[in-house]
Length: 117
Image (tube, rainbow, N blue to C red; front, top):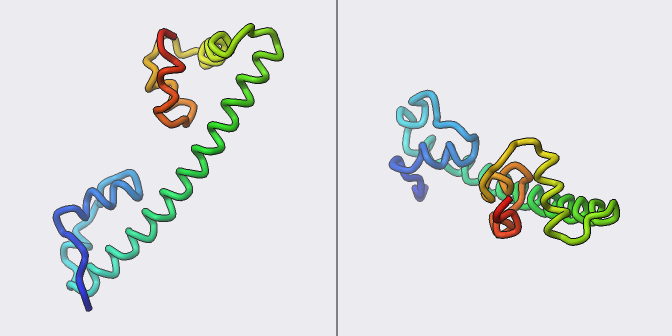
């Protein structure tokens, strides 16, 4: 068997997949073959999660653009005003543009649209 696992980055990979560091030494006490199986499973899970994240991001963009259009149909004179209304509806007070992207599930390329909010 060819081993591609990396004991130095296992904890980071686990956190990327599950959001938390591993809680036991199961991986570190495993045989090399078992470590590779665990590693391969994490890589498969990471690939799946990345695809799901991409789908959620596309949906968040679609939802956000629809909300902008809805606000404009309700009277917002322009995109900037519609976005201001959306951020005000979040009722989080002043925030940085990155926070709004995070809160709405948007890519950070949208951050300039929230500038000065």
